[in-house]
Length: 431
Image (cartoon, rainbow, N blue to C red; front, side):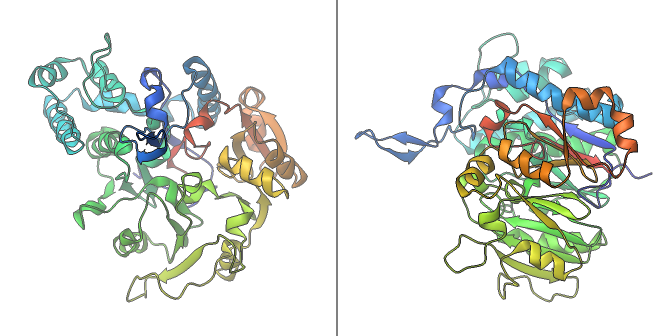
């Protein structure tokens, strides 16, 4: 029996993994939200080693309330038992003393790589914790009933479950982070997929078997169809992963891999921040990059590979306009513009995740309600705008109307402070 399956971004969702915001967000400080620290002259020029990739401190009750809207929609679509919680899955595997010790040892070794020593007394205390408290401590970085620090950082980015793994066909790509702030949550997720009974027998793709510096994050893996996969070459995923990942992609039955080399900026950290497929014939795009073609534009370089390719190198780009490139491969998508036609609105709403939509089925997508101009464009394209609460009350009715297009809105005012939208917040397991 298949335990994981993703062959399209838009097939009806059945199973998913998420992580609800918790006290880890309350443990971030102002020092954690600056990408650069001041030098003696007061200039922000020195990279901050404790930058946690969130651009501001969040109001915890509000971010929890916003995320609950997302959870309610997912439960109404998949059923309660098919919405897996990251923290609960972690707690489950900690019931095994052997796995508990393995994971604790791995985390302690990881902490050493960025200069943090976990004391022997803290290690003993970790091993003595009940499974649920150990899972919470792993995410908090502090013991649950005190402000006693155990690890260097809390893990606020664990809410962006997309990067914890990526299901590809009937296999799971185990994620490895480029940034230190995300290495612990990805280590924990790898152990969930290795040891949890829900994934027993599932094929795991571990790219670091081919090279210890290889990294890939789920926000850069987009499964366009049962034939075509896009992999973003981004701030977080480097081209050196392509030769090894390509073999695994083709082994799963896909026929074409596009390596999409994109600008390496904070605002465009993953491919899904500028492009998401939302329907059989539609996609949501950030126009200045996805549709750019001129030599002066900040554009893409797209490389096409197939199972017949002999080498995998960033040579002979097939173009820069991703929509036109996909059409040549038989996937015709009408682009809907993040932020509308005004460049300033496009830039503002891409920053607040306007291009990062998540499809629960064809033409039924989740997006933040704060992206006003993006919603206008979707509405013009025939998408009804429905609140999360309304959708949850009428889920079966809406899902039965397969041709009816709709945008389900969640607030996102606090969630977007971490630079991630509905697709970033979700790790689909089965569609």
